Image (tube, rainbow, N blue to C red; front, side, top):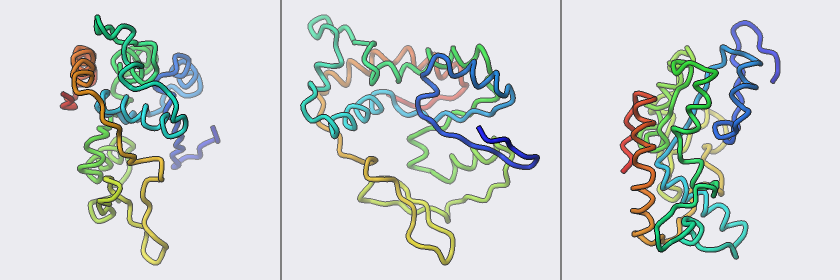
Length: 203
């Protein structure tokens, strides 16, 4: 990490930090005062999105349904599959709480980031101790993508929208499998809501 001068904030983004076992200890040993921001979304949608991204690179992978279960007959979910494991947020958070107090972690709702980007970014700005500069007027909704886009500053080029790897159409997944996953994640989600003091409304 680059050295941060007084009055500066240094930010770094790597999605895999939250699920990497060694990350909390390493970050804590570098700076115990680091503020952490974790963007989470409905773990079922997240798993399907993860699969969709892999499918775009490897079109010959097995179906989502077959990868979800260790045994489809018994309904045993394969928690060793990373697409499933990442969404067990409570388990990952337990590891972080060994090194950081909950007050140093902000949990951002991926759903609200789409429906109310300025509201969620307002929370981020408050958490970082920044003046609320980003507001509703900085966004417009891109119907094609299904995501908000950030308007550029006056006089600059086109707006900033999410790249072509975002907003892909998800494949149709057997609704019975989706329901089985909802049932699987429910207790983990409830625990996560308790740990964070936030109900994300997944289900």
